[in-house]
Length: 241
Ligand SMILES: N[C@@H](CCC(=O)N[C@@H](CS)C(=O)NCC(=O)O)C(=O)O
Image (cartoon, rainbow, N blue to C red; front, side):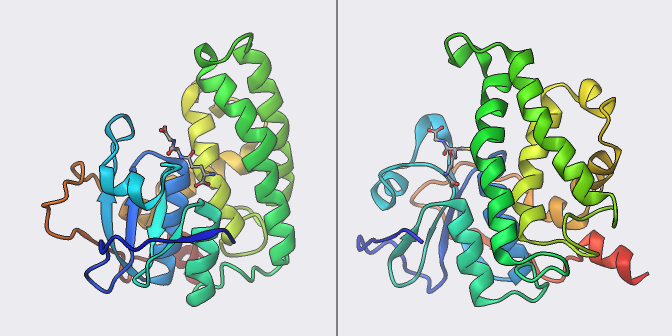
């Protein structure tokens, strides 16, 4: 895991600081892991077109999410944040699903962070890329969806068993992003298990709890505590009913 030390005296509360952006799927990953662990962090909402100086000082690469630990360690990759948080406390066993090893999950996540995300960006933001044909890119991204649909077929709802895992929470925010580019097209696709899993995820109490709306953080603001306590994961609730 790549971490950096940060010593500008910005960590004052004894709690980690999460620089986040509500709609960013990478930041959703971090918030989902923190919610699962039940950790409290100070949330600082970043506006990407007007990044706070403290955020850029903490992490010059300036992408969200960034987690600054009380000892000044800076974790600036979403997956590293998930692994760090769940490595400390993993009450829902996201790192140990019934039907996969951590290596299996990391391999799947790498496919979605790599070629799937490359195609997704060229589909969603085709005008930012020379020669990107959005429909061709949509087809490229869609090839990866069949893989997920096959994984979901035996247990309906989760990639690796009867409860969510690191892979579900790392990948589903990006499936949501892909689906929302053209929701009617996605909903008509041949990935019924994935559609059902996505709908279950986005309508869960857990997802609602990590999607709170916050004002842009200003240095003079009092700390805004992000602490998801006892919000059931709708998946687990359903399993126990
Ligand atoms: N590899 C990074 C990617 C994070 C990322 O690209 N986040 C986007 C927002 S969704 C961002 O901050 N982009 C910087 C910008 O738009 O200036 C991670 O996993 O955390």
